Length: 319
Image (cartoon, rainbow, N blue to C red; front, side, top):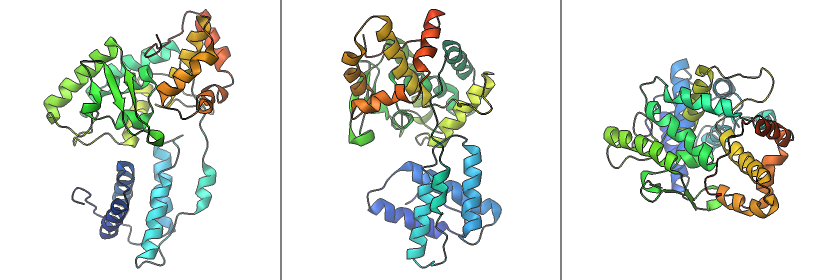
């Protein structure tokens, strides 16, 4: 457990809890990251008791810092509360199940060609002292060009990215399925530049292809924070009450764009969908249909982009 250093009054319990979870085969970095966040919150606010005020205070702070994100991370603090109760703290607060009812399922945000172009120009000009300075374009370009899930991109290791042969291996993804995806010459160039700088900074054996300032794989939260920072610095619009753009929308865009391209080319979309399903790592065709069904205005919207010459249609893996 060395490396999981906590500073709050719950440091010992947190360390023991993570040791227990790891003994059960739960090794996720996301759990560790969020519990470190809770620990830092308790240290900063002088929290001494694992009660409702402490737990929900942290939850509210996290929700405000990640607007629109699925609050699956609440299960970590809820589970820790149960563990505390079972290990000598019967009054420990277990986050109420009512928090689950507040989940709002985000609808896909439909990127335009101009928004994507402006976003990547801003990403290339990002001023930061963290590795995101040279990783931002590569990370989001890989999501955009291959339709990767955010977690799949984050978990890539250097050995999963073959820049000589031109492919990436997505290993043990959702449903414990792996797949090999081709990448274009343009993406190879972008990833090569990123890899060269990272190797110079962190050595030949860094823990992830995309890393934080400490050399650890980038955290789930930092991805959303960086995406929002780039989006806002690019001066791109945000709807006050409508759909908000997220990194995951690059994956939605990949699906929509390929379907629209096949329609424009006169291909049988129903015949092509199984290829898209396999490429995106879906277990069933129904999961692929989701990308159309969750956005009823998709076809009309992309038809308009196409008429105006604005369609940005990635072709990776679907020549």
